[in-house]
Length: 592
Image: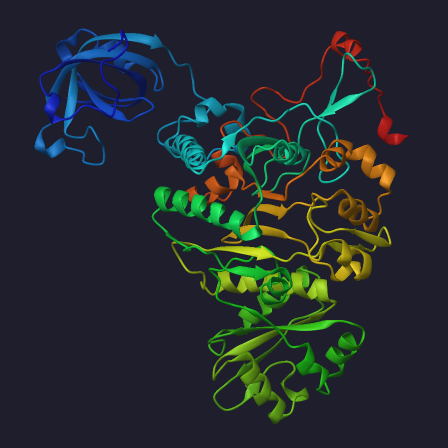
């Protein structure tokens, strides 16, 4: 009991009838019923109905208070009449007859209503985020975030992991996204960087012998905003383990994720072990390494089939190194012409020159390319695609990467338009066996395709004797419902393998020593095999809450322009501050 409350606004029940109680909270709503005023008093925990009777002496004053004013009320718990019981509230069987009240904080005109909850402009919501956070939906999202993080911490500790904090002020790294740089006052012209991730530090903790590390780690990347990515900062469950294989890391993550999603949602969750899908297979079957497995459609490689036909348009692309992908769809026969027209328009918006298709009708096969294939080839194609009468196939013919991208987007669009996605499920999978390198057409050379600190499959022998574009890495992503939650890898802990790996990626030995000297030096002094991963907390919350935008699960997010309107950040600083940091602002630098 405190001077402000004996109970929270979700606690009182019929067992408390007759008690003298004190409640404090926000004036959520008020209703005047023939001279009797009913107010809903809200705090972090719930709502209690308070009754202001005509003889209270303060009915008139409270009736003129604005919503969202903060009140303290003392009164007696009373049973509601049967016709006013509200079982949607935890306190719906009782009400408090007010005897004394005190205004703790008056509310001026609100920029938007808290109740009833309405869709307000995002910029206004972010400018007054502390008000927006009072709304039940986003308020519950942030409370859920707290519960999920507590659950994670509990599980990780029970599994023998140690929570260790790593530095926020660190060194800039040439790999990854843009850094946020922090000028040094004591070292003019030099800069710290905010960590894009604790990657090097957590690996060095393994070298230090801590064996199992975790951290709810803040990470900072100067990236553009997306629905699933907040500009500026985000949080991840950062994990690293020594003396482990890829499968052992999978087991830990599967245990954590299934426990979280089972406890905090009512949807079905993929049972462990999650499906393992090779990167190359994923790009063919789904056109992406972030497949939404709720969608039953799969993409088929039809390159070899069309290579043996007389369809010259496709054969010309194939002979120039291109591919043909097909998407088989059930019951296309009943679809109107504008369905195909809209899909063609969508394909063209993706950069496709067209979108060929065939439909196996009861009496014949129809479609733009039906006449260029013989009856025998049409039957072979039908069998190859596993379809029957009234079904159809869409075709995408292009350079391999483009065909994958376009087919992947069309697969997603078909799944949505045809309402094919399985409902009320979380479908997890691992994407494994990523290529270590890829060819960069702009740089005209080989670059790392994923994580440069990963162990190449085959070790030093593969690096020295294999084609770099054929080398796979012990790298993996965890994906749920088409959203990538994290990337991870078994790390390259051998200095000689690392030097060679970076050499193929275009770095000299001296550059590696200069940029990653602490890691290289540490690996020369006894480093254990180790690996890790870092699932994104924000994206986990997005999935649990069914939110389409990541800002709905972050207490104080930035807008799409990487601005925080409430605190007016970023903003200019004083000349005195700049002078202390040995910095001068040069106007018009973009024109130089």
